[in-house]
Length: 133
Image 1 (cartoon, rainbow, N blue to C red):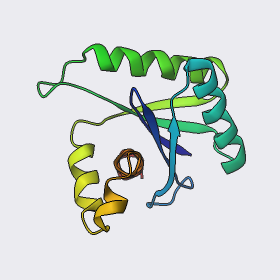
Image 2: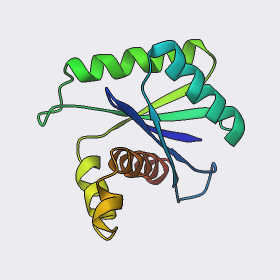
Image 3: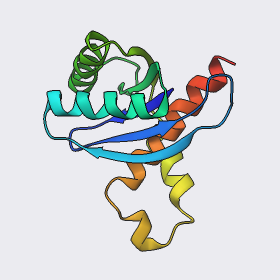
């Protein structure tokens, strides 16, 4: 299965096997428009043998959804329309977790624009795996 951290500029990507507790980063996709982005995710899902995408859903601190959540839901709906099963995970604290996980990397690696997105995708997918073990 895939883990996706969907942002305006990039989509962080992680993968895991069903029934396994660990997720692994697979980089990021630079956003190029919804149709191209959906195709890129579908191609990755095909290569990885993934039938499902776990998508981080941004919420405000109080738990309500805002404009970014609407964008993420629209992208997820496009993935579903293309045949990929989608599940959501609250991603409120994944950026903080991702920052901690990448803190050990050399400064140059940490500053790569997609590195944090990839780490957030890993955190999103591992959250799903823990809750659905």
